[in-house]
Image (cartoon, rainbow, N blue to C red; front, side, top):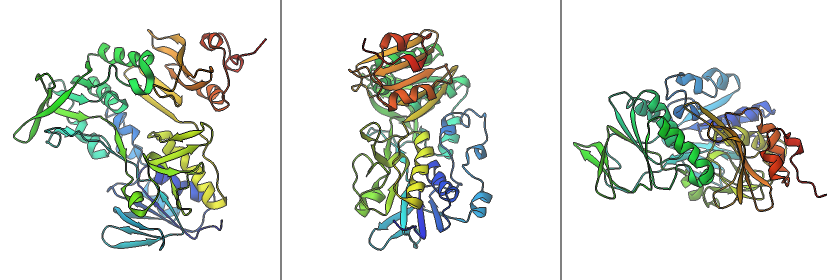
Length: 413
C-alpha cells in the first residue's frame, strides 16, 4: 500500500485527536485534516463525569492538545459536521459546502446518548451527558436543596450519582434490572456497587418501570413510575446508554452492524477507510470475536494501530478492552470482556465487604475472560497476559492472595 498524500480524520474526540497525533509521531508528513463538530478543540470525555463534573479540574485539562500543537504539527482543523462521504470520488462533504479530498479516511464519529420514547423526555431539565455543555448543565443541578433523578444504573449514571452526592444532592437512581451494572458485571459484583451507592444515601430503586416524565410549564418536575407514583425532581438525567454515530458511514455504503464493521486492523469494508473509537465493531484477533467498546482506552489506543497501518501496512489492533471508574472511595480498573451470559463463574481474591479485591470472570474451561481490581493497584499488567494467552487457571490459586499471578496456571499432575 502506497503512502497516502492526504488523510482526513472525521471526529473531534480523543480517538480523532490521537489519530492525527499518532500519524505525525509515526512520521506521516502528508496533508492532514481533522474535522470536529463542537466549538471546542478535541477533548477527552471521562472528566465530564468525573473530575470536571465535580469541579476538581478545569475544562482545558481535558483538551487532548492546545491549539499550538495543531499549528506546530501542520494539522488543519475544520469545525463543522461531515454530512456525506463519496467513496468513489474520495471526498468528504462538510456542512456549509466545504469538500475535502482524501486518499485515506479515518472515521471517529463517536456516539450519542440514547433518549427514552416516553412522554416528557424532551422537556427542559431532562439531561444527557456527552459534551462539556451537558456536564455544565448537570453540575448546575447539584446542591443540598436539589433533587436529581437518574434513569439508568450504568457507569455514567453511577458516576454522576457519586458526583451529585458529594454536593449533598438528593439522588434517586432508577434501574430497570435487578441490580445496577448487572449486564456488565453479573450479580456477584454488581451488588458491590449497589451497596456502595445505598451506603452513600442514594435512593436506588431496581426493577424500576418508568412510565413518563412529569412536566409543568415545559420543565421536568418528576418521574412517573409504572405504578402511578411520582418521584419529584428538579432535574432528570437519562443514563440509558449510547448509540454509535454510524449514519455517515451507512449512507456512504460501508458495512454497518452495531457500529461500522472493521477487520483486525480496523479497516472498513472500503479499503481506504479506517475506523476508530466508539463506532468500531472490531474483529478482535486476540478475543476471537467481534467487539465494540465505548471506553476511553479504546479511543486512546486504537489510533496507534491505525496510524501504523496508514504509514506502513496493516497492523492488527490487539489491545484488550480496559476501563476504569472512581466513585466515592472506590476506584477500580477492568481488563478484558465478559458479558453476563459469557462467563461460567466468578472468583474473588480479597474481600468484597471491605471493597478491596480482584474479581475474575472465568469461562467453563477456567480461562480468564476479564478481571476487575477494586482498590487494589498495580495488578493489571500481571493479569493481562493470562487473559490474552487464554491461560487455564487453578481457581484456588487465583483466589489466594499469597500466590503470585505467574503461578496460577493449572498444572496437570
